[in-house]
Length: 133
Image (cartoon, rainbow, N blue to C red; front, side, top):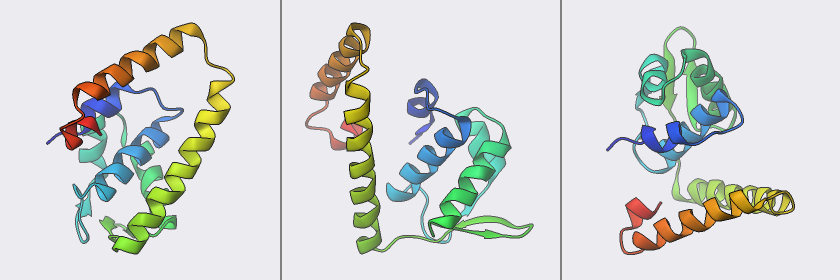
């Protein structure tokens, strides 16, 4: 399964943010498991960017305890237990809710139409949870 197209099509604020979101989703979704070695060059190539934003995302994930950076040896997935996984999703849902509340006051007709199209697409995959996500 390839995750990259969904990330290439989105326009996050920065390349580092894109790499971080890709890695966070891949770790939380089980694509990268505890003990897996993360190779910046491979990940950067998959999501279409240079290594530097991926390395910055590694540092951010290291600060959160999701990966362990080893000097001159790369990053290893630290893994999450179920309680930590719930905590991550709880924090993300709170932050994403805040982001929506801030964005709603600035949304235009064009963006609203795009959101309605996305909702329609999501409805098409209601019975296929992986595709829906």
